[in-house]
Image 1 (tube, helix red, strand yellow):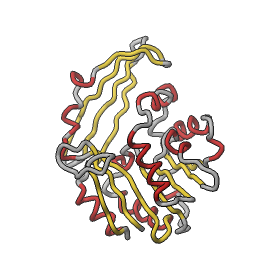
Image 2 (cartoon, one colour):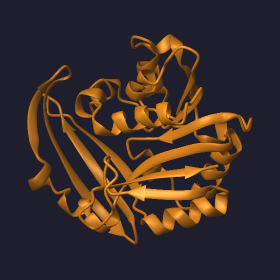
Image 3 (cartoon, one colour):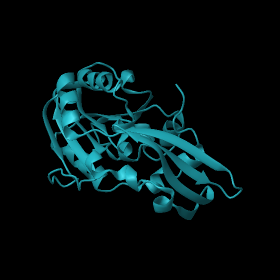
Length: 242
């Protein structure tokens, strides 16, 4: 499996660019609400949220396809209390015993339409009956990719990796599939370009996929405070029951 985030210098900037906020608070509160004694964090990345979920008597598993990100996660304080697995949802054990599974940081948007049914099936098989699955995804109604232009996203800053010039640029957007380049120009002029593909799905499209996989009681919100979802909602936050 190739490493989708294989540049260690940029991985080390990830938590600076994506600090914990209302999203992390939502998932920690949910874990407490459902009394989760076992948690899977699918697409855990650098493990910033994953490590914060650790409590006495609770097991936490972080799963991610990026060896570089997991390597970084394993070196952080508190990492020894988490079980780290390199892989995607197919690496999950079909134990049917997990209380809560989460997929954060819009990670589910990297899963293609062809892969999504198998991903959700793997989660169903890992979660106990009555257990919870929660995740978030960017709202296609907000059409955020239209703002990902060089002019709108250009920035310069000092970082631990050096002085960077950065911007985003969309190369294609069709039927919910958005491909864009993230430019990272280092002091010597090297432009490290990383291409990502995201799949934007409506709440109803996700509901149908969740139902088909065996989830029930699917609910969604337009922010981290439980507001209704509409076209002004940047994200859609989902919660479903196994």
